[in-house]
Length: 476
Image (cartoon, rainbow, N blue to C red; front, top):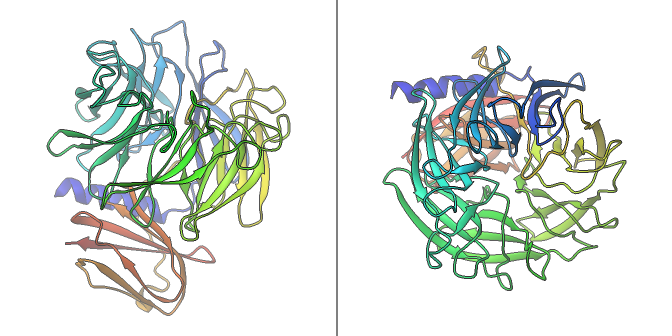
């Protein structure tokens, strides 16, 4: 309980301190030895700073892909697909001291190889991730890492030979920690139709279940991104259909009845083609993503999907030198409300760009042309995170007496009565994982939380002018 309270104390601090607006990410290439970089972008000063260079001539790891994770200790964790003693590493970066530390060498057979998916942290303090290869069947593993003890544990081995079972090559988007406290992920290959699977892992009892076989024609195939859980409790994802005649899908998976629904078939010029990243739900409740190809210039698109009206909108065509091309990653929404992302190619040096997109004004802004010196080629599921700090516990209490949130504890519906209208709500677990997000229409509103697991949560409410109210509640 003491540990959970520490997580909660730290996280309320993270939500309340709005001064830090720094994004961190990695590039697959560039740097002195062309082995990738770790960088920081300050969205207040519009400055890009290379913080660390990966080096093929040492054993620190090379070729990072995916997004970084900020753990409860404030440090950043990530993986490289190659390098180290054998075939990839798990690393730690301390943004306070700018110190990089290799924590784990992946060796192929025993611990897996080519770690690729984004890491997540559960309330037990441990990190979970996947490797693309290695393990007993050379098909990848699901692993657990304890940063407190520097201990690695292999939990699941994927098996391409088991057509009815576990799939192979876990997708580059990593795992999702859902509101039922289970983990969900996909594999890019294997399964009954060799097009990958959607699976569930329960960390409480170490049980693994295949939920869906991707079949190309009906359900899409070869997903490379990860899943997200939207504010309605359903899972959403993308398939690339990389080896099929089709061009990819956007789909929905309902955990309550284990049903799959294909929502969009990507078609090339109009909607884009072959998405490789993950979706992001923004504070307006809509989903945003990118395709690697298709669009007006066949160089990819940025799109929006409304889960309420089931409507798709193409917002942007990537064009090469000006806007970048071939985005293989995912978008993120920063505290300024804008979306940030990267492209694999395009820009002045054809090594990708870092960009900002404001969906409220439909405005694209190129922030940085990536290059061989500062880093380039942000690859599969490349994403950014906004650094949170743990310096204060001050919250905006200007209207704390003008708002009532009840009942607390709550079983199914949380009621909000306020004098001032809040536009957006977010619900986080005690260790900082976003569980729900949505839009509030009136000063008096309600949020259905029955799908949440029992435990302590943080409710974050934001007004149209950026004022924030934070309160703890208990889900029974």
